[in-house]
Length: 116
Length: 108
Picture 1 (tube, rainbow over the protein chains, first blue to last red):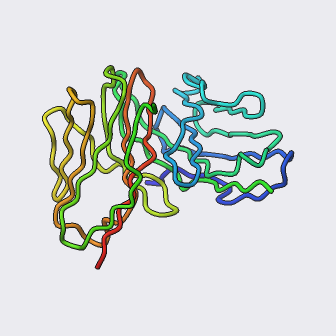
Picture 2: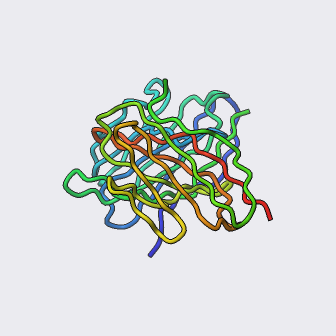
């Protein structure tokens, strides 16, 4: 069974440019997460979707970040415009949530973003 | 104070030794707890859930102390392949919070 797929794996852009990341979760997983991980830190949740609904976007910097999960399957995360401090690894994860219980999250390989 | 705190390490431990590290959480309403493992430049992967009664999986033992608000991970007979960062994860009110991780280096 395929795992969580993310693309691109690496992205280098200049500041003020836009950038977009794509994630395809494990088939059948209803919950999708976007995290940002800085070097030496743990993943920080940006947004969580249950099906197509964003149920927690409290940590998403909404002035420049946006996300969507059309049809409740794959998802895109966009930054516009990017800033130097956005350099990080952006991780997508998915899980099958049932009855409000937390279940194992499966992570994709991440997109390593460098903003110059 | 951060909601989930871990000693960042690194813990440098000789192969075959036993090593343990803790993770403290500040919110007593936290409901479930997990240890994830992250290899260098890889994605995190679930190592084990932490149950109230404590649980063991081979060389790994996880425990929860609700009174003192911490969870622990014990690794016995450590292997070189155990070298990684161990992330503590706490679930509270549908919020999932990762610690910064503890780096472990197993020395040959």
